[in-house]
Image 1 (cartoon, rainbow, N blue to C red):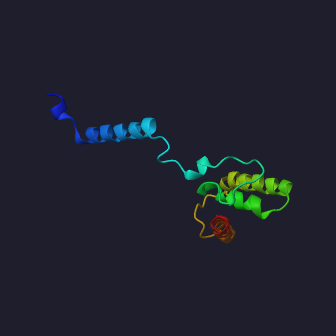
Image 2: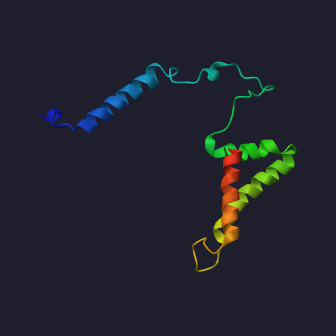
Image 3: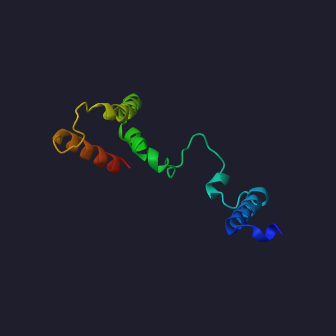
Amino acid sequence: MFILHVDRLMVCFIILFISLFFFVFFYPDTLSHPDNYIPADSLVTPTHIVPEFYLLAFYSLLRSIPNKTLGVIALFSAILVLLIIPNLHFGIIITSLFRPLYKYGLFIFILDFILLS
């Protein structure tokens, strides 16, 4: 009697979990990327490997600077700038209408993020 009163959403979740368990336990390699089966070579890095979209700006920043030490310094300074930005404004006016440097800085930051991504 209880089975007749099961909500449709619960039935959908049960079907979803059964199909998920089927793929996980019986065919785990079906949804895997084919590059996972290429033997690893520690001397050659594949060129098609890129980080996820939220790390692309930092990755391109590191790739654009040929010196490793300066690249790491630039990476840490980019992260520190993100931590400092909220603390730059001490006024009571929250709008950027009367702060032209803020407008230009924000525009450059957004443009740089898009360009590096």
